[in-house]
Amino acid sequence: MLQPPHSSLQVAAVPAQRVPVRDRDQDAPWHTEAVCRRDEAGLFFAPSKEPTAARLSREEAAKRVCARCPVMVECREHALLQPEPYGVWGGLTAAERRVVLARRRRRDVELKKTARTATDRIAAAG
Image (tube, rainbow, N blue to C red; front, side, top):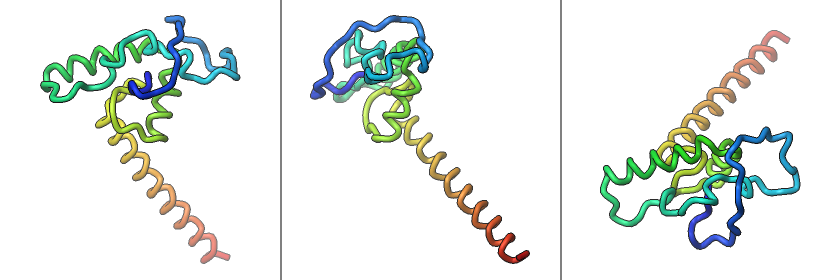
């Protein structure tokens, strides 16, 4: 996903086909292959006071660009790990990313509970 306008990333041409991660140049950063680098940032970031219908239409158009991107997964993970508060990244809006992050947090809590319960059972049996 393109960086916001204040970013220092340089624009580069990107092939439209998906390239398996293992076949990419491992020295190049993932965003050099992003399809969105050829498109306007306005497609991925909301203008101020954008009407809801226009926002939904713009986000769907951005997601279509993401769907054909060879680095969509890397972009999505970047946006989730940062976390990026605005724009469409890796095919997800900011609201969709918040849902994914909340689910991950809940899953992590459940996994910790399960691990603690298993450790307690082993200690009690020993």
